[in-house]
Image (cartoon, rainbow, N blue to C red; front, side, top):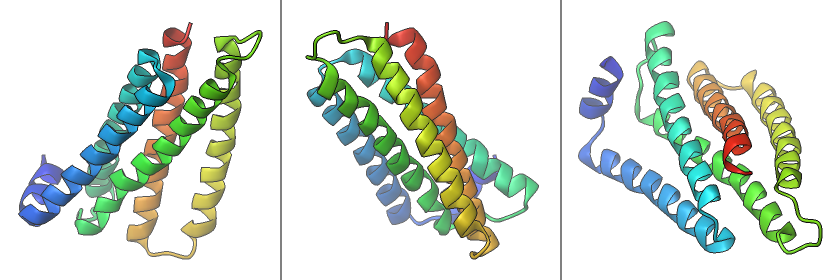
Length: 170
């Protein structure tokens, strides 16, 4: 509960409103675009699950940061959910883009999409790990925590999307 208290009393009303509207805007615009482009509720459900999991992982990551590392959660940590959302949208864009490109092809199979999504998610995982580790040594501890929480939240959500896709994309 300490993290909620720090956020509630440590941030101004403008900062809370701005952060909420920005995250809600990313979420809403992404879901509308996904539905309009794919015309599939399955992808809409997968995306909603991914955004929900990333939000939960962000809160857990920031809570563990404040408890384990004893770092006060300040306004700088507003970047974490935004960075995670942007990375997640890029991953979902790959999934939806491949689906839209291949759905009218002869011999189309949803398993091909899942295989391609697995390969793309693996590549994005390697990229994020390399990016995070290359920046990690040259920044402050607070920026390191922001990077680690954002990357782990994104990786957790994109791999959970892949796991849920086994059940939803049949």
